[in-house]
Image (cartoon, rainbow over all chains, first blue to last red):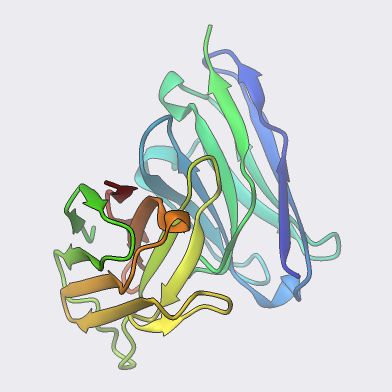
Amino acid sequence: EVQLAESGGGLVQPGGSLRLSCAASGFTFSAFWMTWVRQAPGKGLEWLANIKEDGSDTYYVDSVKGRFTISRDNAKKSLYLQMNSLRVEDTAVYYCVKGNWGDYWGQGTQVTVSS
Amino acid sequence: DVVLTQSPLSLPVTLGQPASISCRSSQSLLYSDGNTFLHWLQQRPGQSPRRLIYGVSNRDSGVPDRFSGSGSGTNFTLKISRVEAEDVGVYYCMQGTRWPLTFGGGTKVEIK
């Protein structure tokens, strides 16, 4: 059974940083692209970033370029999102997603940016 | 960026009756390899999204056959043949043909 478990969310002040993690199991992690998607309170879904199977290629939505970094450790079957220079508008539930096609979603981790 | 426009925004349905959701794309979602990367997600209240349909019309494992997807190019439809109480939630289309990946704004299905 595919499982994705996000962690690392919390309350942070504007300008601060957080590192989200996603522990994957139930599939061959190193064989799949991985994705981060977020959902602001009461809003729809927003794709943030993707990373290739071996980590050699990454893509970002314009609103997070230069502030967020996606990475992975295939040996640990883990996906990461380093978030710097956080803004109030980054407040959302952050989801780890298997593949580029929305295959499987984690339960999400809440990030709140507020002073 | 590809803009996906869903309609209606809200869909009140009587139990046992059919429902239909439209997703229109600002650009053709036909990829150069002949595939169309248009998928449908369901998000029940308080839950994470779950994919129902991939590649326009392919049902994911465990998805009831009352759900079906159709369409091509820029116009796509998700149909529920007979709505059940467990189908309440928000439905999103998403496209993976062109970067960046984008989602429709969602359609909220509720029981009348």
